[in-house]
Image (cartoon, rainbow, N blue to C red; front, side, top):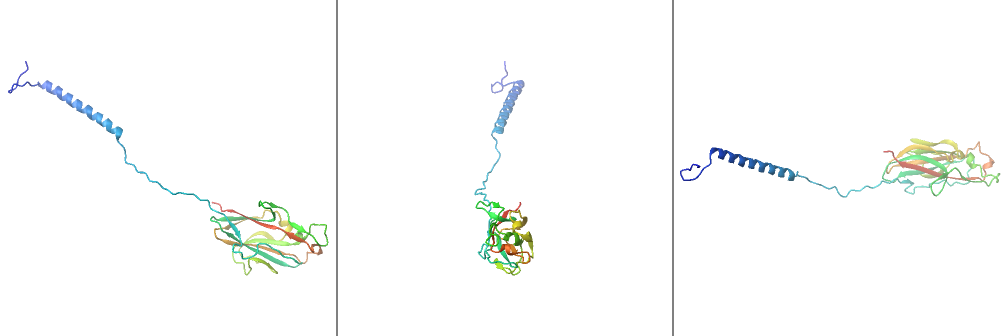
Length: 234
C-alpha cells in the first residue's frame, strides 16, 4: 500500500518522479527538434530586384560627302586644251557620318550604277586618226593626292593654267602618270577621316608640250573618279 501524505494524498516514490521527469524532458527535446526542422524548411533570405529600362542599340553611319557645301565642281570639263596646258580639280572629302572612317583607294575608270569599276575610259577621236578611239589618254598626265593641310591658295573646284603644290599629303597616283596607265588600277592607300573632318582630293593634269603631237587633235577622254572609304578599325 502506497504511503499517504499528511493530507491523505498519495505521492509517487523518488523513482517514479525521476521516470516522469525523463519522459517530460524527452518529450520537450523531441518537440524542440521537430520545431527546428520546420524552421529550417521555411526560412528565406532577404532579396531585392532592380530593372534597367529603356535600353537601345543604334548603328552608326558612314557618309562620305563630296563638296558638301556646294563650293565647287566635282568634275573636270575642259575643252580646247593644247600641248603645254595644265590644271587641277580639288574635291572636298568630308565625313558627314557618326563614325570615323578610313579612305582606302581612289580609282579611275568607268563606274556603273551599281558602283562597280571597269577598266575603261570613254574616248573619242575626231582628229587625224578617225579610225582609232583617240590617243589623248596616252599623253595626258595626271597626279592624285590627298591634302590634309592647307591648299596653299588653291580653291575647291576646277582651275586651268596651274597645278596645286603638295604640302601635307598622302600621294595616291604619282605625278606624270599617263591617264591610260592609271585606269582600272587599285590605287590603294590609307588616310584617316574622322567625323566632321574635311580633307581634299587633288587631281593635277598636264598635257606635255614636248611629247604631244597632232595625233591628239580633236580627241576627248571621259572618266569617273571612285573614292572608297570604310569605317576605321576598332
